[in-house]
Length: 205
Image (cartoon, rainbow, N blue to C red; front, side):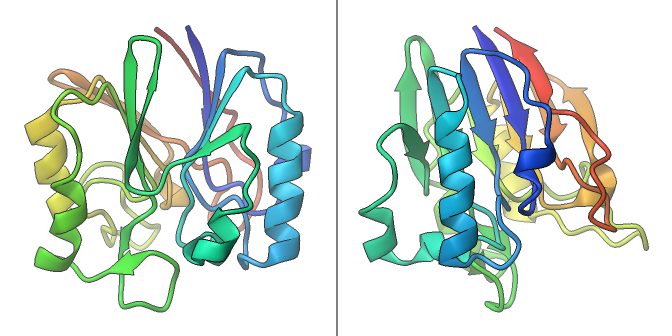
């Protein structure tokens, strides 16, 4: 099974070169301002991709997905995961758009107990974890050196030990790392100036 994975496209999806694959995964910030127009344009684009399965986890810019009435009208061909699981053949996915923050962005939760309740929902046998937020201390540095990742998410990943943890959010730290049984991908496509600097990650399972 071939997974094609990306994040943080911020309305530049039409300029991306998307490889063929079985599952297309977007780990958040498909839009910049989260408007209806931006979101509908992205969803139409994602629907048009040839991958048989499409999975979307919104990000902190994607305000459109916070409203229940909008979720009820999303394309059925796209699996939008908001703190929920999806099983495709033998793989269990779990996705969450939640990021640490002060509430000024979409899906923000305060650090500590408030955000921990979301990570407690991650099933023990998750194969592929998709979050918009990185775990704290891993590919979460901004250019000035501050770490934006989530401490509670780090604990949850260490507990669950998924095969893969896919995320974005911090453009400056795109890349991959393998620690113990988990391979981590920061899938950010753009740099901090909004330029396309990376290609989608390919994962063959």
